[in-house]
Image (tube, rainbow, N blue to C red; front, side, top):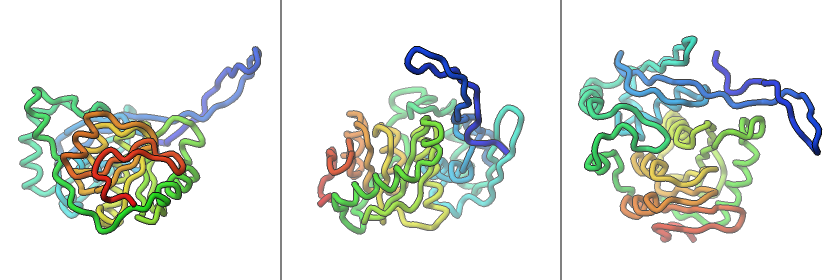
Length: 266
């Protein structure tokens, strides 16, 4: 079974002297996402929670529109990496084959594999409707504290991002970690969907910056509020404004900056 971290020998220099120690290092492996027998994309991910990752990727990329359209899922390990073999509804697979002709792959930039600028507007985004409640500023502080305590792989390795699903009171319900911030969010989306939670009944807290792809994935499944501990990009702010997403950056302690749709924050 692929593991999320391993021990490696390291020569650590402190105060001008070298110490030989063992260090915990986060692992990343190629993971092929296979739909109805056809490989769609190969992603570099931390090899844990791969079922959540595959479901979340399928939803956030618009391959399926509901978790019930993913009929079967199996993780198969190979010497060179992992395959996640999925069986999806025939109609969704037909749509995927159409898209696959114009997509060579996805990486962290969120747009790799797109052949022309015109294809950017065709990505699954959607418009988020009003959420079922408002977010009080104290909830952000509570969520940050709870998330920090639950970043188990980060505390071991220092090398991964985390995405947390939080209630409107700031209670952290689910946490997923990965070397890629977009992968962490896909894992979280999959976990939320698998638990049967509604995407408009909470918010996402990311330990990374808020990039275009983070907003795109959140909006695609109807998440109304995304908070990040670091800065957003300009493209992320513009997309959040257009998609109806409340985007929060620099969420650190009692301070934060709201870049779009501040009506949800009180």
